[in-house]
Length: 620
Image (cartoon, rainbow, N blue to C red; front, top):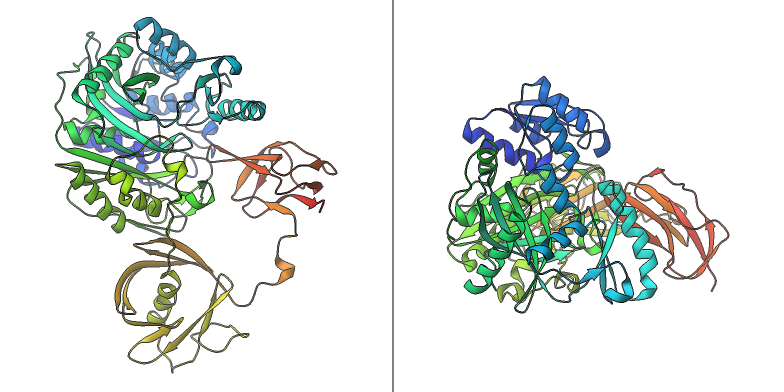
């Protein structure tokens, strides 16, 4: 057996790890931007498939099958995302005489169409969320969902008829871009439900087992952020109902391989949401509590192996997903170089990662960087381990959700397990990095040859007195007192620097952090969170500022749609244009009522972060 891993990043590296442990040779593939990334070195061989976008690389079935043939592979493992739930790709793999590590194309099609899956579940006696095609019949609030979708893409929450038309167009557009199918359907939105899923494994001998449930209620934009196994609210009786329903769902499509049946739980009621006919991102928490390697089980079943008995639950596991995104800016995806990647080293902690120091996070792929999994004898132990792991993790060079995750794990609602699918969106869990500026200046002082007190260390801040550095347009003063520094009026002593790692005492409090530079950017990470400070030599020049009324691109993106034209009168909040980056759409809306006076972009144009997209002159 020799396995082609038809994927990238974290999941490709994770599959390669199991292959190494089994002594099974494996082959990685990579696009042009992924040359030299960790997953290419995790495999025995790596094959270039060229291209930069998913369509040119990881979504090109012909290139993947050709790579398998050229390297003598016998099996193709699709991982998750990309073509993992594409029945045509599965058929092409089988047609090429290769073994597909996954369910049959028929099962993928049956469960890949959310409308067909609903019909099959109703026939199998599995309860489903009320839905249909008529919004007035379904009722508000409702969800517009991509029939071929998953991961929150092509999904829009609509609370009133006035929002429906725009949400429908946006959902169809995103679904077509992400899945090549813009078919959508409507489903009643159940407020404050819990998202609970069941891991199933089926074999070719007609046996399906359920490996217990996972709690996935902490979400943003309908995408999971924190997962646990087992669920904190599931009683033995409810667990049996969920597992029985999941097995019935899988048996209804003669399921073979590892898959996940997702449910919405409201009180004692359970509703089928969908079935993911692939390995899930959060499969690691199930592995932690059962001891089963699900990738190894997938490979075994693909060779005719048995699903085996149901494995018992041991302890509790928690997983968090590290995303390159800015929670404070509506979870805007981030791109750029990873300047510092430092992982926790703790017993009971597992990190599945797709990046390292020096990696570049581009705009073409999903923003998930890694997942951290902790396992302990109880939920309390697993939570304590996760708090420690997040304190040790360092990701610098681009914004991430690390600080938000730490705030979630520490939150009283999380401790008490009082959560639901709308919980995170009702919170703002961001923590200011109050010591960031002090650490940035302390790092520079400690790594620059000492001079006489009050003499600047090469910072040409001509408009300020010596001993000041301008960070984000604000002068931060410093004095060298010999035995200690005074930085912005705070006493800093015992500064120790080891590469990016820094420790010092700030006003009597021992503080640890990491500091790296990228040109004028200074990235600082403390236990509080991360911050990027920009060093400037002067006050911002008004001539350099963006014109009043201008709207700029929040990051490097592609212009997907333009909804207005120059001279058009718009209302506050009206949609002007739509950008796409990292497979997510970003709506740009008018900040106030006025007239569109500039529109220097067109559909399909690639724009850099900060580029002017449009200008609206206020009517006031």
